[in-house]
Image 1 (cartoon, rainbow, N blue to C red):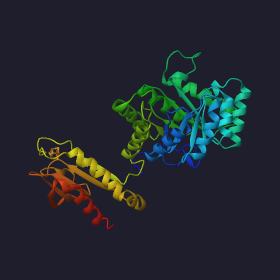
Image 2: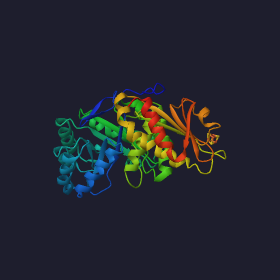
Image 3: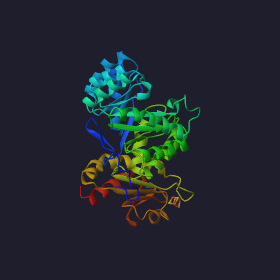
Image 4: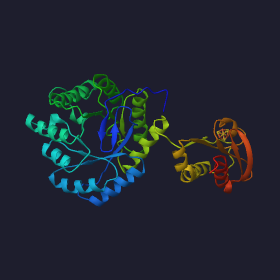
Length: 364
Ligand code: SF4
């Protein structure tokens, strides 16, 4: 989809009805933040995450009481689920028996070798992948006192080695910490060492705008290097924001199809004061997606729409747009297509008129 990005071809791993790695599209993940016992709220959150772009969702399993609710959530979930388990090999096996699509556990934390073998046996028998997830808190503290790219990679390799020694290669790797540079470097290093698919993101990335910027830098940088098969934006708060941000990152890099691409200017002193450009741009985007999103998706067709603050520079600056609006004076707005003026309409009718022009051109 993007000729500037040369993706590293990794091993393809199946997760439920999806696959990660190889030539599969990059998958967006998130995690519920509701105790597993609250089955209905977990299911509602998973459905909402799916609606907002998440394709795989992870749930934390704290103890054996979580297995029964997990099995009910699995049955109701519209997308594959991952069980996040720390230390307890019995929980990992129980989650596999309950029908989970993937588990996240670090074999180095399980304890004795026989317990690792039991998990590997259950995962192999059910074709369930294991994600090794190393972060700043899970480096080998006996060997390393500091979180560095080297200590992260070495700790991940120790865990990979345990699985490989058990002839298990249905592996996804993730290495994350809260430092942008360490995370990028560690992922570059591990990508050179093994061909397993890599789950990328920044962990403990904070909240809001700061999290979005930092996560986009890390995920975007790695994807542009061709590294990363699945992404998760870790964000404090409603996980829907993780899914939305992940989707935007992939769309920005042309790694996910988006039927409507919006362009809008920052506005300046040339924008008339009665033009609320932000509101017009937001309404334009949501109504275009609502009206034409599905058909454009079916046709694999994309439109670029510009919403500009003035007609002096707007149509020229946005000449590449298929359709556009540019603010005029005295409550008027100009409608244009491919830089050519079509007509001037009252501001209150602008979005409606644009929708109608788009519909005519698309012959819908
Ligand atoms: S398009 Fe017009 S209003 Fe927008 S930034 Fe350019 S000059 Fe200013």
